[in-house]
Image: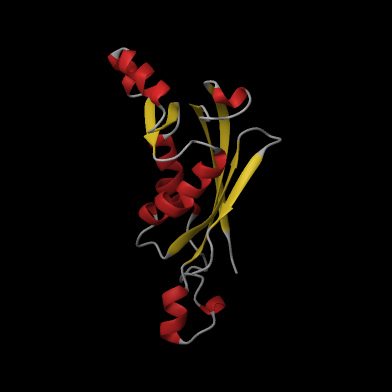
Length: 161
């Protein structure tokens, strides 16, 4: 199986609600987000009766152009999470702080439906953003690895269907 990988760097803040240590406080990271894409062969292989390896590549011999990953996934990060504060929509402390902020600051907050751990962020990118952004490309976002630091990272892999 071919895997096409590309990474993108963003800067963002967050806090982990309920964390037992320093991560309960407002802080940020220079995140490196690695995208791993594969051909969506689930329907094609069954319809054509061919092994997956025969239908993974396009006419040029690619799974997908790296520029398409940049356009669809990297730019989504850039537009939605880069230089933002990623906050759980149920984090009352952040909601209160945001209400007290000046209007220019309101655009700095991005509310997500999960506690913004690297684990939850990676799963969200694979399960929600990947299918939405890659629709019609014939490619699936199979895995996301998020590095919070050079020493610490999390990976989430989509289970086979």
